[in-house]
Amino acid sequence: MGMIIAISGIAGVGKDYVADKLAKALPKSKKIAFADALRSELSDLNSYIEGTDDALYIESLYHVTGEQLDHLLALQHHNIYIYEGKRPCCYRDVMQYWGTDVRRKQNPTYWIDKTKDKIKELQREGISTVILTDARFANELAIADLTVRLEDTPDRIKHRLEKRDGGKIMTAKESSHPSETALNTADFDLIFHRNLVSTDSIINTIKSNIE
Image (cartoon, one colour):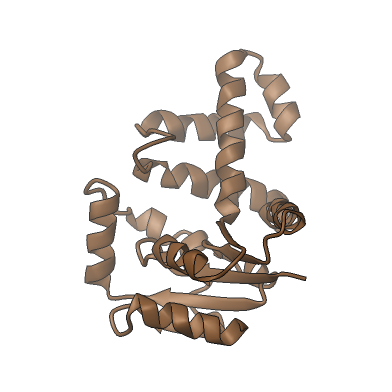
């Protein structure tokens, strides 16, 4: 049975950066995200939208209402983003809406189920440690063997977001969305304040807790 590590923290705290370092330090490990399945679904959905004018077919295929689909399209048309290449900073509200307000509302374990399937696939391929970079809800933490919370100062987080997203800062609506706040008071196995400890120290502490 493999090890699952879940990393949590608000946008800009450096979850992917730490996960990349951790994956390099652990043999037979792989970094994935709950949002991988979300991005894939939105990409496939956009392909259907571009390929057909039959809205009823798309609604039936994806088990959504016309109102939900219309709202998704309105959000996408409002934002200018690039799906591949430059990080899609303006895509956040689309992902929050579809991932939480639509899919999690339909089924709280929707993305967990898809991620569990991916984990099983990786384990069959010989991956022994899966690092989840974006745990945002309590039931997502629950599938992990070790839970890690990253914290940092507002100024350092703001600097990362400005550098990463081309100067665009999260709106108040985005930063107060449940996907950003649901775990603010949750219990974690390990909590690191990145302004106080080095990345190497974080990696070594995590390793000592699983070896």
